Image (cartoon, rainbow, N blue to C red; front, side, top):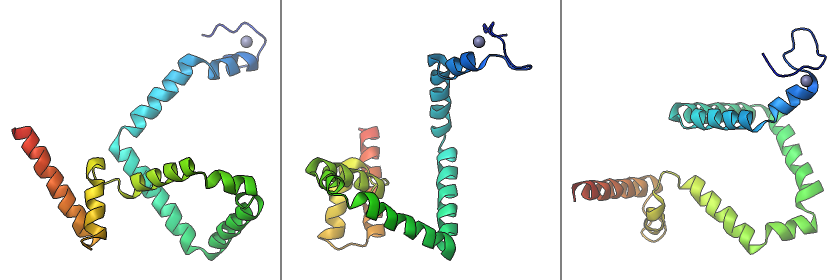
Length: 152
Ligand SMILES: [Zn+2]
């Protein structure tokens, strides 16, 4: 079944060394990567994972003991790591702030097409249109553009 000829446990396909080599082999890494890509390309799996995380977060927020444990963890993180001068300097570096901002925008505005995010911000900041309404305006505009592109 396998090419391992070394002494090994009964019922094992390979000895420990051969099994480790197999688990770290490029072929298996490719298969693993393909499997993950296949799994996460299915929107149902993405939605299920989101829902699971949402449920776990809600359960944690509803449990005072777990919530206090999380708060304590946050305080410990700040005390032992985040308040260190080298870490503060690193986190305030302009390129890090820029990357963090872009990532936060990408998350918060994930429903707004990237090319229309400035227009969306203009609607909610200058025109003071409520976010849900502005989102609907932008998405309608986007659909019209896509329709025009498909027709023209
Ligand atoms: Zn072996």
